[in-house]
Length: 127
Image (cartoon, rainbow, N blue to C red; front, side):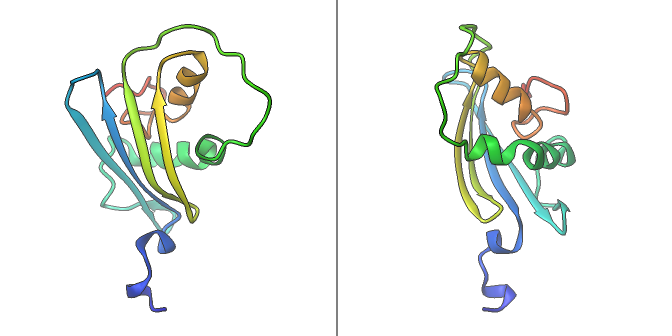
């Protein structure tokens, strides 16, 4: 198979689309994160694609493909109405992950991936 006939995700280890909604009924924002040769490609549209790529490399495996285990105890706190859906490819595996801020565990996932969810490094993810 030649490079031109290969699917894009076969050539890049990160090719993700992020759809973020700040509140029910609010407009949806769409971002892209794609890498080429280990760096964000010009097709990436996040505010800080380098920080997003770093967050994906650091936490992606555990967050996108969690291993089964005992149930987690999560604090019952509300972090806000934001939701995000991340789809695409990571290291040759298909990603379809939903993020929210509905309890302590979900807030922790959101914070770990904040740069990918439209925020900048160290932010809550809010745009």
